[in-house]
Image (cartoon, rainbow, N blue to C red):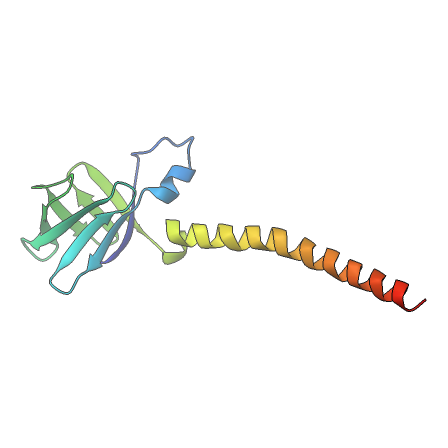
Length: 125
């Protein structure tokens, strides 16, 4: 049940980047399950009603029922599928940061080495 879920058929298919940002996180918080929607800033507590059925208390979906069916979450009018850790928004931002770092660092190292080599050549004359 715990993990990151991505809503299906709620977002415009022409804006795929939104799918990375809109996630529902279900986490174990010591006392029970919590459902978090970081992009909206909402948190809700999940109270057990049955083996895979919970009452949502708090947040936008207050009073609704959440049902977990394998890797699928049904919460009120939301249908969401569990995504792998490398498909979450956090992972995307880490990958993007590493990519930008590589775009900046590799040329900077090459230029630095060329300048160093040139200085050595001038100094040895």
